Length: 128
Ligand SMILES: Nc1ncnc2c1ncn2[C@@H]1O[C@H](COP(=O)(O)OP(=O)(O)OP(=O)(O)O)[C@@H](O)[C@H]1O
Ligand SMILES: [Mg+2]
Image (spheres, rainbow, N blue to C red):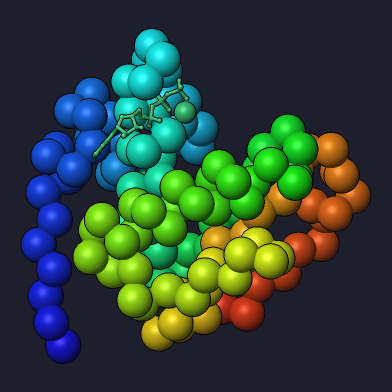
């Protein structure tokens, strides 16, 4: 098994690095336009999947059909930058991302279809 060395404060804007290990129920990223909020959260999503085997992520935008060109693509870009892109299967038509070693999922839905968010189940671990 190979080892990956990540230096979190260097990977995301410094202000957001402490949020990686926060145990709080709600975490809000605030900052001006282009301050790195989205990149920091995307990095945390990939980090969580790799370091916590029970975590699956549900990513919500206001409209489900805007995920493909924003959150999904961002997560793909960030996973590649972190050097772990090949460990994931990226299904852009759903869209959905699967962590190949365990089957953990990153799912994408929208607040425009509230009923589609109920009763989501995942193969392994819990939805976060
Ligand atoms: N860790 C990083 N590594 C490389 N580039 C980064 C990183 N964080 C941010 N950037 C760059 O900064 C830009 C802005 O980052 P990001 O989109 O995350 O900001 P934001 O706070 O979400 O902006 P907005 O308020 O517009 O949503 C990105 O396009 C990206 O190129
Ligand atoms: Mg953003």
